[in-house]
Length: 206
Image (cartoon, rainbow, N blue to C red):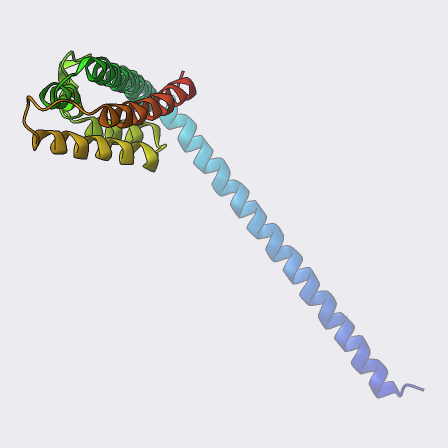
């Protein structure tokens, strides 16, 4: 059994907990009222500001500036996208143009001098699609193309380098030297392979 002293101690603890609980509730209520009062005052000030000339100027400035900024950002995005798409198409046509040019003149070449001229398109276009890329080498055009499409193909770049090496070897021959049929076949095979890759890439970016 509990002694009278222990009963009094328990009752005192209960009263203490009740007083603390009541105090906490009162403090929470007071804080809540203060927060609501502050919020009310803030919104009152905001409404007062927005309904004033300064507020209207502020709103119009934010909306107009923000709207104009969003429009400019969107416009810039589509301008960049259009420019990149145009460059991709231009590079595709130039690549195709140079491949066909080299194939045509290689088939007709009878001397090493004529074959060497046929491969000059590896370094500069004979009939450029655009003056901006007329003097760019085929390798640079491919690099630019792959930067725009983010789909580099090591095989393609290797074929172009082989064509550059073949052009250099032909320079070492006398221009009047008969063009070997085996060399013609090897070069045309390289160009056929390059053309197949180019057609495949063009289909991917339609």
